[in-house]
Length: 319
Image (spheres, rainbow, N blue to C red):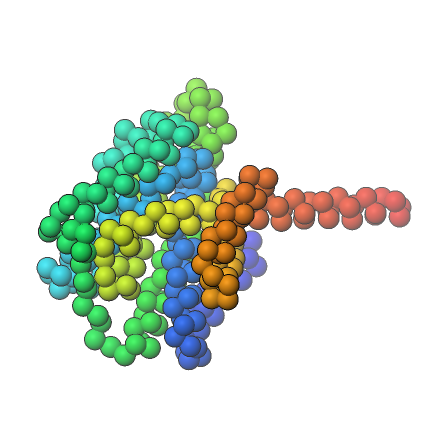
């Protein structure tokens, strides 16, 4: 345990110091996006992985966080780099508002309703002139050199990825996580055992939405433009869902693996072959998830157990 913690801290330290090596701006920008998806996938797995409630509506919380911080910048002159916690609170509040009735739904009904919430939220924004409507909101660029700009966003996304990962790891080991896993195994039995399933699911949804809203707030400023097509993009919802499942959404390590591996594969294929091929590969990865529901983490765990059993059998034969 101590070794793994030390390895994580060393890795974070190296990643934080990476910009001092003067890497290409493309590399910094790419890693910033990777960190963003790590944070989103980890946030999603708090509800979708631990409780087994598949949500396609997290992009709504992403957009709420982005628009909240954008409005604070445009009307009060407050930078999203300092007000992204407000975006997180707005997203969490929105999740609490819509979450109380929807967490009572189960299975595909829950997934469909969360998708509808995301679509309706985007529709409301498109038809609200104060929010820029379909045109969106242009944000002023930070007055600094591009190298400094990219480095700051790199650090912010790394920080959010670390916070989301630490939160997911804490939930996994907490009473909240045990309750959510009991819900995933059998919700009726959990209720019969005295578990307040509605409260736990709502807590997980609000916590997950808050983290996603914080990421959305920083992302909007990174793009310097916030519009329904960008921050309510359904591709974001599908991508973070696939990354979490591909890596293994029942353990906190899974979304990290999924986000990193699929981001690298997607970027390589997009640059060298084409975006359509990248989408096909993503679809194939989703099919693989059907055969390996525990993702890469589960598959690696099985291989490790098989090796131990094999080595144990050899030791018995030698004796």
